[in-house]
Length: 303
Ligand code: ADP
Ligand code: MG
Image (cartoon, rainbow, N blue to C red; front, side):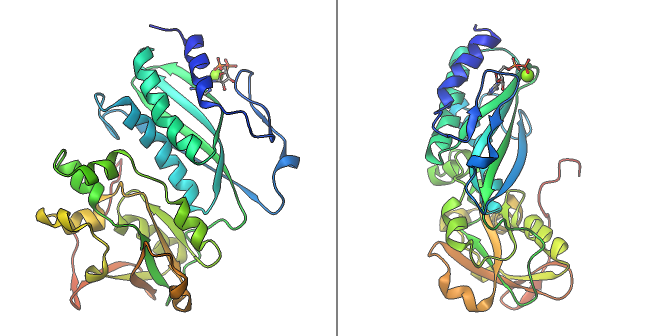
């Protein structure tokens, strides 16, 4: 067993200390960032998300996977805003300070922090049932909101949908799907590619229908989707519930955004047009021209 202070020392391994704007990092009562050292023309974009044992992951999941996912879902919110993540705070609630667990967890967190050059600048550590919260601060020249879709816009999604939900219901059956569930990669590549022309944008965390539904509500319009256009990893079709996974499964961490029809030719290769925005409200789904009813519409913690 190690104590809280050793723990904080161990977390120093997550700090690279290369960001000049951070004039004071971990170790004091608070971190300090000098706004004069933030590049001109950027706005600060701030988000936070918590993962709780038994709700978002299992107690015996690999600590590396828990660390990866906890930071991935937070970085994904930055991608959804078309922001570059810069600084994070990490709030850990731990049942015990277990050295090997912390080491594995830190490796999982550190992979994505390094990859996206994000600096850990502080956090808090308490004891209690395992929960991990991050607060991420990013910078964007052009933050993407949910409210900026217009009627006639095309609805686009990155990657494919449903693989993570397939893995949740069929663990250990398909390595690729297991990796999508345990090790999602926030789509900064897509966000950067579309920043100049995407209108409304969101990340698909709670399921396509729920998340696109948020764009519809915020933009005061409806959306029509076409099942035949959905990007799907073919092997998940071996499960009769595959369409539910695609439309409502969640945990995809892909980006869903709208564009003007004339911008379609600019889309990066890994993006698919799946429908369009229209007058009305809510998301309606068509399969071979027939409107279909879809059972669930995303995960609601208090639903
Ligand atoms: P205080 O009692 O003043 O809040 P703490 O003992 O909570 O101080 O934290 C000491 C330092 O360690 C602070 O800089 C804090 O940001 C950092 N810290 C504590 N827990 C974490 C954590 N889980 N991740 C990153 N930094 C942490
Ligand atoms: Mg504290």
